Length: 396
Image (cartoon, rainbow, N blue to C red; front, side, top):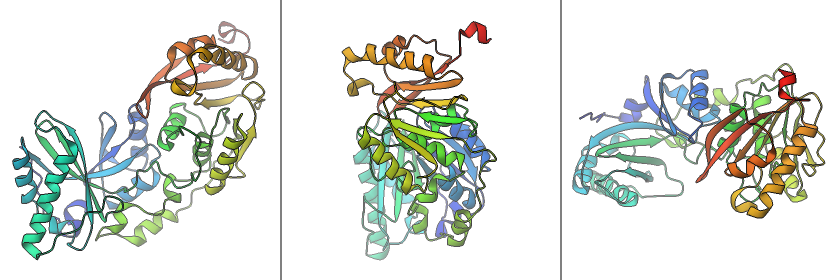
């Protein structure tokens, strides 16, 4: 049994020296996230399903929260033990010195994730650990820390896989997909982390033209512009969870905020269009919140009438599918998509996210690549089409 019952005075056992971290993401984005972590200096990088494990110091933890575009949150595992019932879970949690992690006047919350035959309710396991923490503080100090599920000082994650229990400290707070620029959203808005991951999966060089012809409230073009102008996704955030920790280093975080992020030598044209004037209004508002209002060209236009720049580039779109478009309209809709791509987008790499592969066949195009992604609970494919003038054989 591997028990890491460390003595953590002011987080000394967690955020001093090098320590392990876990970055959560969407399925299908693990490779992209691993590359991002390597780029900011992470070590011992190992990919799992919807997670990437890595090591680094406190500065890297701050940078991970501030810079990673495809991470949902950054967790720090600090205590592991085995338990097969609620009594064992309570007893093992009681053995940890919780006063080394936070003080009695601080608030806390626990989120549970469960994949075990021994436990059957994630909320119940969280309550058992909460009781152990409260009972230990009450016995030692006569007072227990309060629970705050909305904005706690310390947010804990409890993961139970089979009989292995892992407690992790959440350094992010609100999910990192909540950049802070989106004040308005169209129905079923695309998650910012997923949007960033899709753009990175295309291999876009951040110099060629970039288009989203069904942009809704603008998430994909805004994420593309943030990449083109080297704007870290954490720049708009009001706070991170680690700012409430007792060892928070404000000068270190400020130094990361104040670093220069130079523009790329050749900046691309980034265009977002939508048939809905309301959606374009929201997209412009969100881009303005991200200080990118003049960096993205938003247009009210149907896909059929959209005229792209003629130099080629990358097109990414998340068209209506599933419950957003009735089945009988799917065929005609995708015929139009295919016709417009062939007619207007020669020289473009066109990427489409969809959960309806059957409807996608009506585009009349042969896909070059299909990547499995999840948009919320929907299993999707991110499909690439290379659009040529003339036939594919002639271009080869």
